[in-house]
Length: 162
Image (tube, rainbow, N blue to C red):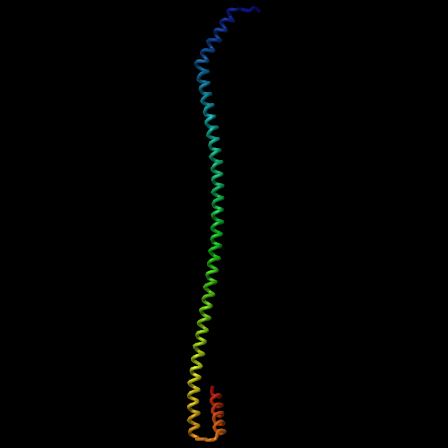
């Protein structure tokens, strides 16, 4: 086998022309498509990172909102407890005041009835005294003993009626 220089030079020229044509028509558009693809992948990676950051921020925001809602619920419960305690204390105080008022009213009613009964008793005693005096005068008894017996008898009669 012999080495032919002309074939080698023609092959090198053919490779050069092929390289020039490939570089002009194939490698340029191919590298352009690959660069666009690389940029697209890079853009998608950046968007994914942003989305991941937004999701993490959203999760943190939801956690804080949930914590705030729990805090508000606890405050509402505490406020309800305090309000119910105040209302219970008010109701108890009102009940005590009402009981005191009713007691005072009952004491006044009892005192009024007592005064009325005493007044009635006085008027009856006065009437009885007048009757005793009239009976004493009717009989015109001069002896003390007879007068005392008469008064005792009349008092027993009056005592038996009441």
